[in-house]
Image (cartoon, rainbow, N blue to C red; front, top):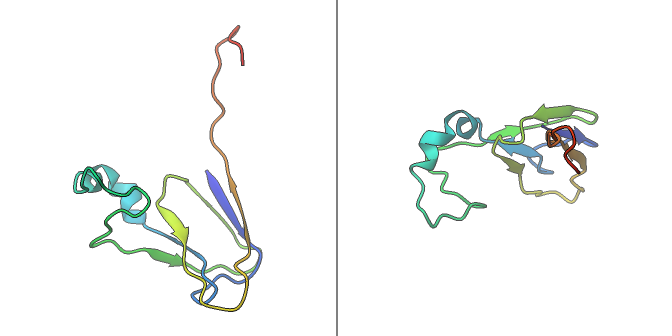
Length: 99
């Protein structure tokens, strides 16, 4: 789970978040179309569209961190300000198992 708290208006000028919902829903089919030597940080996105998410100050966006997401470029003279927090399930330990 991941959360983003906007500290100021996040829009097309100052950047802001974007995501690709199709990948979350269809990852298994999509990954089969990728080459073995693909760059995991810059995958081929042909035919896919990112959805821009504009936020107002104090807006909180919570989402599954497996959702393909990122930050749009900042084309303004303003600072892109937000707080980001990610959480993952704690590792389960069996009784008597050391930490």
